Amino acid sequence: MVLTIARNHTIMTINVGDSMAIVQQTISAYRELTGDSEFLRLVRMREDAAHDEASALANAEKKGILIGEQKRNKELALMMRSDGESEEKIIHYTGYTLQELDSLK
Image 1 (cartoon, rainbow, N blue to C red):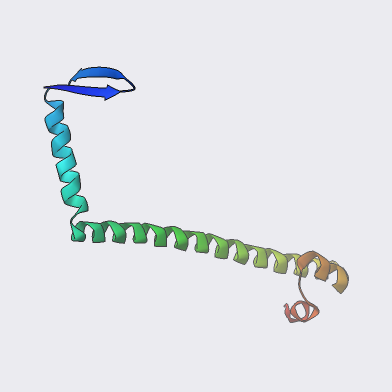
Image 2: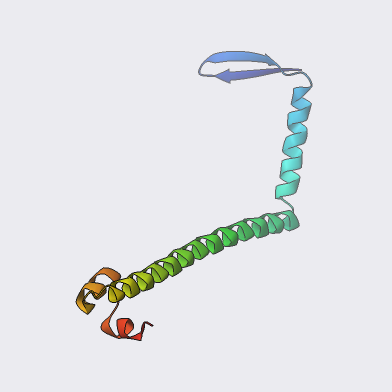
């Protein structure tokens, strides 16, 4: 099979042989699948699941970082207190309020 294409005032002839049949079958299969509402529903479900998983991982990472920061601040405050640092200095470096600092054990 020969395909003739006219583009920009130039005529191109391409020998496509059996590949044209493969392209036609591929186009037909694509149109059939994308026209199938069940297929589209499954694609959307897969996309939604991937999005939900990415969001959950991002939230878990943020939560883990926050927990780590809180633990570090508590350890820092307790060490500073045991070293005799002033409450003002501990509050400055940890971000604690006076009430939070008083509640630490």
